[in-house]
Structure formats: structure tokens, C-alpha cells
Length: 184
Image 1: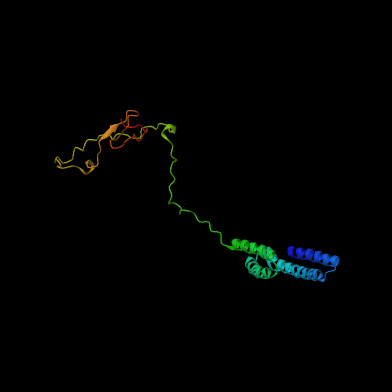
Image 2: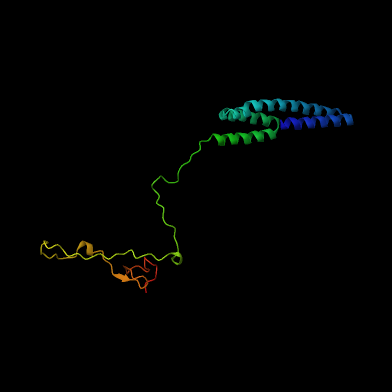
């Protein structure tokens, strides 16, 4: 409909210039412009029926197919309607795609962690290490002595006591795991 209006204005202007200058060529171009305005007006009515009404009724596939036809017809006539119909076609294509809402990870596979806080902002925690109470072996145990290292003795580390919070931690660690104080 926009191009029908533009063709109509151009036709009236060309006819007016042709009459004013008594030139038959301008009157001929004016009549051509008026005919193009009528064609674009009729095409605008059919575009409304075949594309816009289909969208209003929710028949997007039919509207998308009709917009392809009108893009081709618009290229033969004028480029502006083709550009507008191309935009409508792309919008319909995007509207018809299935909307996938996939989670980035399957449920239960991601474990949330506490956010990192530098040592200066952390509150000193209570010592979490509780020394194990020594329990004497039962009186009914056999009196045989076992030779060689016990399996639990193979993984023992030398322990260091923190001077800041008095927690024992393995000597290979550079900082206290409880308060973060460096080992000195």
C-alpha cells in the first residue's frame, strides 16, 4: 500500500509536469505511474488477505509460504515491498522455530560450592579437628605380636601444630587449613 501511494504521487506529479510543459513523454510516464499505483494497491489488498490475515488466525506456515510468493512478485515490481516482506518472512521463520529450553547441565550433576572469601574477610572457625580417644585393645585379644607395619600406619604424616589456632595439620601443608596462617 505504501508503494501504491508513492506510485500515485509520482504519477500525479508526472502528469502535472507534462501538462505544464506540454510534453507528451511526461504524461505517458504519469499514466504508467498511475497504473503501477493501481497494481500495487491491488497487491496490497491480496497481501493483507494472504499474509496478514493468516498471521492473525495463527496459520504461520501458510503466511510464511505466501510471503515468499509476495517477495518474488515485489522484486519484479519494486524493491521496497520486497524488503518489507523479507523482514516479515524472517520474523515468521523465527516465530515458527521450536523454543528449546535446555538446562546447561542435567539435574543433579552440578554441586554448588561456597563462594571464595579471602582470609581477611573470613571469620575464624572453631577447630574442626577432634583428636581420637585412645582405646585399649579388648582383654580377650590374642597375645600374639604382629611384625611389620600396619596398613593404617603406611599413610601417616608428620603433624605440625599451628601457633595461631593450635590445630594440628600435616607438615607438607604450607598454611593452616583452619585459619590460613603460614607455617613458620
